[in-house]
Structure formats: structure tokens, C-alpha cells
Image 1 (cartoon, rainbow, N blue to C red):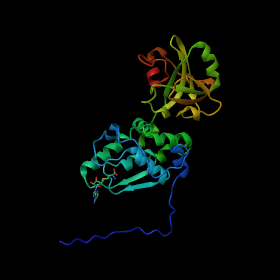
Image 2: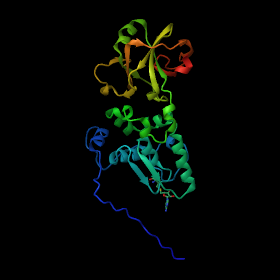
Image 3: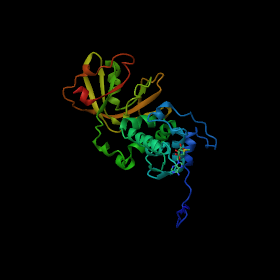
Image 4: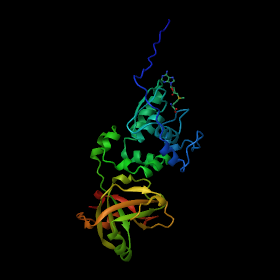
Length: 289
Ligand SMILES: C[S@@+](CC[C@H](N)C(=O)[O-])C[C@H]1O[C@@H](n2cnc3c(N)ncnc32)[C@H](O)[C@@H]1O
């Protein structure tokens, strides 16, 4: 039987200029213009959590391509989607995605990967594992905290408005340094040993100062979403704490004149045990009150 295929070629009524984000690519490449040879780590085991595709590419590669060539909100099409690495990278970066895949096994892996990042914590963790995305968010600090509703950038996260954002960063500090530190209202606290690795820091809504023998913890509501930065990106006016050997710093801003009242707060319940118990750690309001 003879088959006739008809191919539709979209015709543009006007020329659409090619988009390339020179500035961002330069920043990602250590402030020198990106060349056309890229060295990136091989695909990591966490990228295959939903199954394997024989030619799967690393998310870091697709993220860079998408960041270089599209703006947030753009549609990205991969007509040979495989396990949809293109789509996952697109969604992590706030782009929309359409994928076509003939093999049902690969389509199912794609669906599972997409469902995986519908969990807001996994979404944030994956972003933090991709160095180019971390670098982009260091310079474009407003990307995650902008006034534009988060739902518009993550249309699939229908339940995002129901997220609580009530996590508390617990910061143990002795009485004397506490007197100096607490009134500043702007802290850059050093984070070591991946202490916040499993945490979605944009969920942190409070900082609470305490000392292990001091049941009187003082909670403050944060004035902006906290973010992680490297040392050279700490803005002026922030007091540096726990700076020695810190891998990164969490920036916290609050009004020191307005401690908030979190009723029945039992600080002993949330004492961290084991390794790193004096590092800042995060707990939720539910587990305190
Ligand atoms: C080389 S893989 C590329 C996967 C992905 N784009 C990437 O770069 O990681 C090509 C995929 O296209 C799928 N494919 C091949 N022909 C196709 C067709 N006619 N329609 C839809 N999918 C097709 C294959 O099953 C395979 O998973």
C-alpha cells in the first residue's frame, strides 16, 4: 500500500529574530564568552530515577541549551522526546514543553519524570543539582522571588498555592553573640556539609534564635524569600555568621523589632541530634507548636 505523507511547514508571517542570552552564558562560563565546546559532567544516577533511555542526555546539557536560547515562558518542542530530558529541563526553568515519543516505555518514563518534579521539594532539589541553574539564580535573584505569581511560571504545580511556606530556620547561638547578631535583621549564615541539601529553602518563612539550654527561642518572620549564595555574592549590609569553611551562605532578612508570637513553642522537641547538631537546620511550624 502506498502511503502519502503530507508535511506541514510552518510559515512565519514575519521574521522572528534568533535569541541567544549572551550575558547569562558569559556569567555561567566564569565571565568569559561561552565557546562552542562545552565540558559537562556525565549523566548522574538521580537523573535515571524513573528508568533509563539508551541515549538520555544530562539535564545540565539541556538546561544550558534552553537557558541560552529561550526566555521564561517559551514553548519548547522535542518531537523525538525519548525520556523527555528536554521537557524536564524546560519545566525546571519555567518553560513549557511539548514532547512526541512513539515508544510507550519511554513515554511512561517521561510521564513519571514530570510527576516527580510536581513535588515542590524534588523540583527545588533538582534545580540545585544543576550548576548552571544555580549560577543563573545567583545573578537573577528576582527570578524566584519576583512579583509575577509563581503559578504562571509553574503551570503544572496546581497545588503550589496550598504550599505552607512555614518552615523555620533554627539557629543556635550563645547569649553573647546573640546580642550582637539578632538586632542586625540581615544575616548571611554559613552552611556546611550540605546541611540544607534536602530543604526547599524557599519554604522557609521564619528564623528562630535559640540556644540549646535556652528554652526561650525568638522567632522572626522573614521579609523576603531566603536564598543561598556563595561568599562573593553576599550583598553589603549583611552580618556574616559561621563563615569559616562554609560552602555557601543563606541570606535572611527580618525585622528585629518585631519578633512573632508562635504559641506553645517547645524548642526541646526540635533539637537536632547527631552530626552537625550546631549547624542551622530547618523544621516546620507543625513540629514545634
Ligand atoms: C535519540 S532519542 C532522543 C531522545 C531525546 N530527544 C534526547 O535527546 O535525549 C530519539 C527518540 O525518538 C523516538 N522516535 C523515533 N522516531 C519517532 C517518530 N517517528 N515519532 C516519535 N518518536 C520517534 C525514539 O523512540 C527515541 O526515543
